[in-house]
Length: 470
Ligand code: HEM
Image (tube, rainbow, N blue to C red; front, side):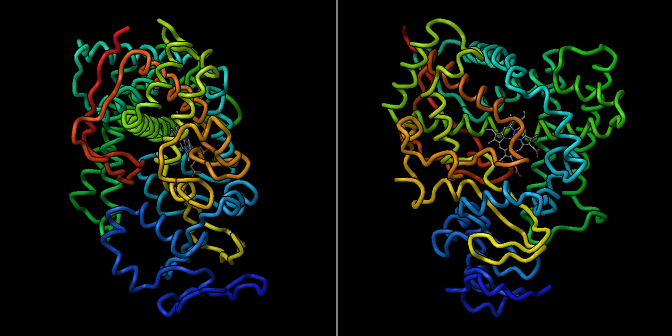
């Protein structure tokens, strides 16, 4: 569908668009330029988005014939898509279609009335007070981690990628699915990660084979999904037989299956459990890995973090009550998510025409937004690539109302696990700082953030961990 831009919309600086069938309504790279850059786009899509924003402005159109595809990187325009005009945008995009191969019709990917019903249903275990127990799970997991590390009084090289994935899994598994099911949570996480790996690998193929075509990748995906379905089925059966264990997510879902005007079915429980595993495991793990790496590179921040942990916690574990007394740990977590937002890509489809950042966006367009791009915009952030948690303490970061910082999204679809993630991240950082120091191995190079499902260092992340002598 082609449509002229309204007269009041700027078309200044729009380059030759011969390669684009939809009208050009915003500047952007040409087709040949995109083809030339194809290798670097595949190597790091997130860096490509950032360089596009720096080169073409805060609304960029890519030369993709269908759907018209825009990067929207201006905070006010992001706010319009996610908050002010959120009803005009849905999640019918390639990103969420791919995810739904794994999460089915779970909260993460649904829209409209189905989404509203799901969100109402799953919200209670995430309310402020309801997540109190997450603090206890963090302490238990941290203590188990230190026990596994054994004698580190003289320092030991630890793979922080593996360690943080494990801790985040234990916390999300214990908090949402019950400690008694930790064995299943482990299997569930492994099966989920395998299925996601396949989805990501498929999305990176130059040509994705159709769903009906047998292929090794299709077979691997189906095997991972069978494993996933089997594990979730077992979890549901065991909990249904044993009865509620508190008011965790699994209890809430099972209760919803047998009650109310619109009881949910087994498939819906499966889809929600998998959605929460996808949304709540690797995201937190990724933020923690980066946080430890960044702190290890900044002696002053490391000292501030340890001093705060000593003063507030002394010799005890951190709990939910400590949350507001750990501003340095919070600032470290925020500054880490500014530089390496775990969810680096958020996409929407425009249902009707709109204007974003002064540019006409036709109905059906794909709108790409990336907190990574906004968080590194030099017009919004001073010295954007520097790790400076202080900016979140001294008020020099842009105000929350400016939408310059949105690692958890915004508006009605804002992350339902935001408070959970802050609690887990802050208590883990403070808890670790109280007990150990972390250092980068001599000669280690900066890990590269690989933008897959989350933005995280790929492969092992070795760091030197040493018990603090106190
Ligand atoms: C540092 C950690 C986390 C980050 C950065 C993060 C980020 C996000 C973002 C950006 C969205 C919005 C996506 C969109 O609008 O398209 C989102 C949604 C969501 N997140 Fe998180 N998240 C984190 C942790 C968690 C945790 C711990 C849970 C659950 C235990 C969780 C569950 C969800 C769910 C279910 C949604 C979909 C909400 C909806 O559409 O109504 N997240 N998250």
